[in-house]
Structure formats: C-alpha cells, structure tokens
Image (cartoon, rainbow, N blue to C red; front, side, top):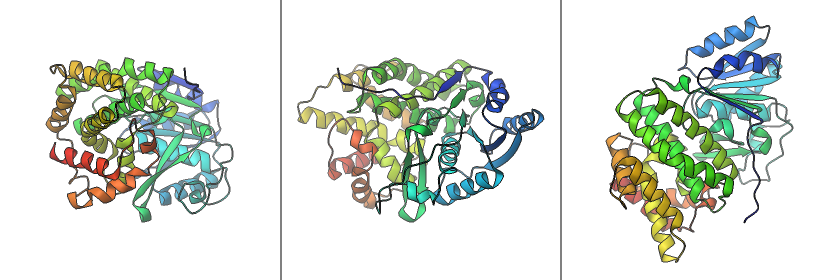
Length: 382
C-alpha cells in the first residue's frame, strides 16, 4: 500500500441549522473579524449584526466574484488597516478563496504576487495565517476543506493557486440549508464541479485509500441528487450535494485532480465560470483518458467503476454512463465552449497551456497537447 498523509480543516461542523453556532465559534477565535462575503445571501447581514451584538468588532469586505490578484491586494490592505485577528468567509468558492488568501497573506510581508508561482522566482513562504473560518453557501468547490486559494492573474489570463497546508480553515461550518432555493444554473454548475472533483480525485495518480473511500461512497449519491435537483427543489438532495462538495474538497486536498481542472485554470482566466467549464469538459475528458489508458494497456478498473456509477445514477444502460452524463449536461444547458470564451481556433493554444497546469500533473494517464485538443473538440461537439 502506498504511503499517504491526510489533511483536513482543524474542525468541521456539518448539518442543517449549524450556522447558528457561528457567532460563538468565531468569537472564540478573534475579537476583530473581517467578514468576506458575497452579495447573494441576505443572512450574512444578520450574522454581522449578531457578531457585533456579541461584542465582536466587524469589518465587511464584499467579494466581486472569482478573486483576482488586485482584489487580493485590496483585501489584504483592508484586513491590515482594520487590525483583523480572524477572517470569516461566507459565500461560494470564490468568496472562500478570497478569505483564505487574505488570512494567509495578511501576516506576511511583501506583495501577494511574491507568494504565487508566476515563473519568475521561487514563491516566498507564508507566515502563519490568521485564524480562518469558512462557511459555504454553495455546494460545489469544497473550498472550505482545501489548502489552496485560486487567484486570477489578469495580465496572464491565468488562474494560479496560492498553496500552503496552513491555509486549511481552522473551522468549516457547512449548513446545507444555505443552499436551499439556489438558481438552477448555479446548482448545476456547482454540482457538476463537485462531481468532477470527486471523479478526478478517484482517478488521480495520487489517489489513496482515504480518498478512494470518500469518492466511491459519494459519486453515485451525488449524481442522483443532482438529477433530482434538476427536476425540483429537494432539501434532502441539497444535503447530499453539500456533503458531496465538502468531501470533494477533502479528496482533492489529499490526492489531486486531472486535466479537466488543468483546462479550467486556463479557460477560467478567459472569464469562463469554473463549474460550467468542468461540467462541459468532464465527459470528453473521461472518454479520452479511457482511450489512452487502453492504448497503454493500463488497468481499466477505476474507469469502469466511474462508468458504472454514472450509468446507474443517470438511469442509463450499462456502458452508457459517460454518454448519459454528456446528455445530462446538454439538457441542463451548461454553457458551450464558445460561450465560455474558447473558440475552436484557440483549442491547441489552450491545450498547450493546460499541459503544464498543476492539476494536469495528477491526470491518470499522460496526455499530449493533441490529446487535450481532442478533449476540447469532443466537448465542443457534445
């Protein structure tokens, strides 16, 4: 058995209504709290009032979307000027990544760019981060369970991860009720992101017994739950997807991902929404990876397991799971590659960039730029 290590948030609280514990839990970590938040969940305003009523000094920072390097710089400056001693992020994966980056960079001297792998020099090491609490309001990225923050670098049209084991939250509070009633497009994009993370973590060359257990137990239920949510609101399905999202974060933090996320890091830099990119690419990537594995005479056991789980969850005939997944993505009107700012003329250039992405290094089979171009071409046809 291969050696492995396990990393996770120091503590996780999961369950409907557990957000009610936030004030007490945050108060135990800091007296001056920077709340990083999105616009969509009105409850965050109630939370800020409750924190202030409990005697906690609160400063609010509104996330503008997926964090860019300039936004991270501004957030770090805000935290320092406020004298924050704890960061609380309430929102989707982008909000949590922004909060995570601020918690890590605020105590560290220097420009945030100095700590990123931009290719010019070896990234600097972070000082010990501020205490960080993550409270997700979407079920997709599992960012509350990961040790990296994805940051856009506009002048390079790329997304680069700030990575450090100490970026794992001190506390993750996962209340599925905060995802109830989310718009269908958001539900599908985030849900497909979680499923992609689970599948890529399971197939990844660095998969281990713990991630295998998490992924194999979660992928079938998550796919079934997302199918239910495609038809109607379903609190039980919301619970399942919140759990799947969290476990997908644990899985990727302890194994890795694959070419879909390698491509997403490139395409996301062009402005495409991350979850939609993953959903659009997953079926094609599974097909090309399986083809390459057969050519290399590799074991097909894991690919066959994923195929079987998808077929059963989607109600397809045996051997038709990936085809059914692509049909599901199309039926849910997940944006096309053209709508995600990837015209056919750019396929090879995007593939070359994705080839060197950190996520691609975990892919289950070695791929060439042409193989990745084939993934894009199949995804475009689908």
